[in-house]
Amino acid sequence: MASTMPAAFWSWKDLALGVALFVPSVIAGSLLGRFIPASQPVQQLLAQLIAYAIWFVALRFVFLTAYQVPLMEALGWHNNGYIGTCVLAGIVLAFAVAYTGTALNAPVVDPPYKALFADRWSLMLFALGGVVAGPIAEELIFRGFLMPLLVKWMHGALAAVAVAAPFALLHGPGYQWSWQHIVLLFLAGTMFGLVRWKLDSTLASSVMHSAYNLTFLAGIILNG
Image (tube, helix red, strand yellow):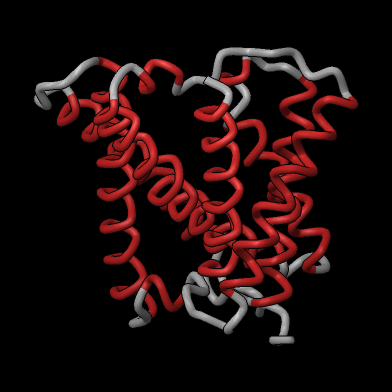
């Protein structure tokens, strides 16, 4: 087993700068998304992906300028040899969360991406965003950028739990703030964080996150 993740060499000021950079990135992504000839749900998804891309480019510049370290290396993007295990873990976690949701009597709510199931091309685009780009971006932000800062002040396992809270709340509006869904997202986020901590790899947690999302997507498609 690989060693656990180190604490961040960057500071809380860098986190504040990252948050500040995210706002104009979202605005730019929203504006650019409007020029894309597509339905509104597709425009919104593309705008989100564009915003992520702009933000990561800006953050990369910050890391190269301030620390002379490539961004992906700083955020723990490397392969520790557990990719296959992480795929299986993501699938198992999806089933565990689904069964837990049943036990909690989680209400059935329309997923925020339901409109993207209108046609094959929209569904393919959603798969690209929801199964690949989205998990990578979220893992780099929460488990790559934020979590190592918390490791300076608390045990890695506690940091995984702490980061899972804002991760779950970020998805709250899409699930109509159902407390059951928030709890389920919190549990999933905690598991992603524990993998990030134990393997010191955001690639590992991203693969697990992608497999988790893909399992749910496959379930939704198979159930019509």
